[in-house]
Length: 459
Ligand SMILES: [Zn+2]
Image (cartoon, rainbow, N blue to C red; front, side, top):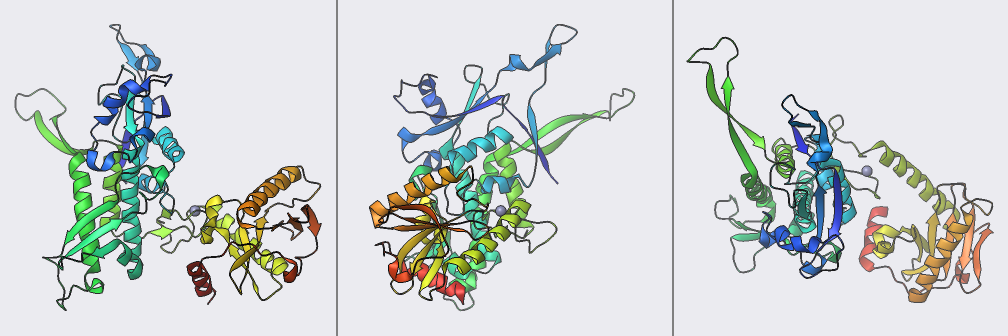
């Protein structure tokens, strides 16, 4: 397995900069130009909103690394470094969640652990002999691009033609052109990404037996072309071949003792990540998606091609979740007209305040919110007051917006607790759910497409 040693920094910081901001105590605004002039591609790597530009700063102080003094008084230092293996590209890809959101903090944690993408302390002059910068929009674009490609690769591998059709769009005017267009990442305002991922694909040299360039006929050629174009560009920009002098050991001779050699090296971490990724694709590595739907990370398993979970924690979480759902079905759904839905599939899940919702199947209206507890929480627990406050607050918020009046908490033993805003009930233990006719209907409606999806999955 290929390895790469990244030279790292002693400290990292995540900060916001902007052109005129003089109010930064640390004074980083003066480095605005320096950041803008780093070797990124201005077309794709600049942020959507410059005022919201975030950067990650690597701080390096050579004097702090002094481990001793050499015989002629020179300073001996030990450079901090991190050895990385090829599978690092999965960590990089998974900095995006499955919806395309890329959190600043996750990038910061990654840098803290593995170092910066294109900077290393001694390879470029340090600003003020101490700092290197990388913009988060640069990080995000590279993450988004690789995430988009692995998604496409996964859809290709699983023959999800319908999913591929959403990304490969036929040009309406030009019969012989497709566009690879993925706006999954730029649509999140907080990602602050300027551009969609977009690539034009020319069909002239592609093979279509029917002559009509039907998607089903040419999709493999399209996928390969996208890889060809993007990977070539990524690796060309950063390939690095160095020439060294090599010496045969032994007694000095004026011929055949010394000659040249050359090798291709990964210039920086980003280059190593892209070349590891390219090598995975080239070898047709099997890609899996973690089945724990709180995770959905991409991974590959050397041992099992059909591995379902990316970690043992995810395997355990999934089993625990499945048990909880079964319990919730038994305790909460006695009426045929009720349906319990995982909040994350509804899109309301953006709030992430409750785990599930109970819906009236007849009109798709939400009747109640449900919270799962994987502990044996009840009125006697230390955490009860905290839980009670949390649920009361979250339900109150939903009541104000959508008139959602009921919430239930179910613990791992199947104990049930009720909230009812109108009746001023806040966490009373109950034996079972009230009759459906006694539940107040909210004006929150579950999207038709989500209902179809759930019905489809039931079959
Ligand atoms: Zn997982």
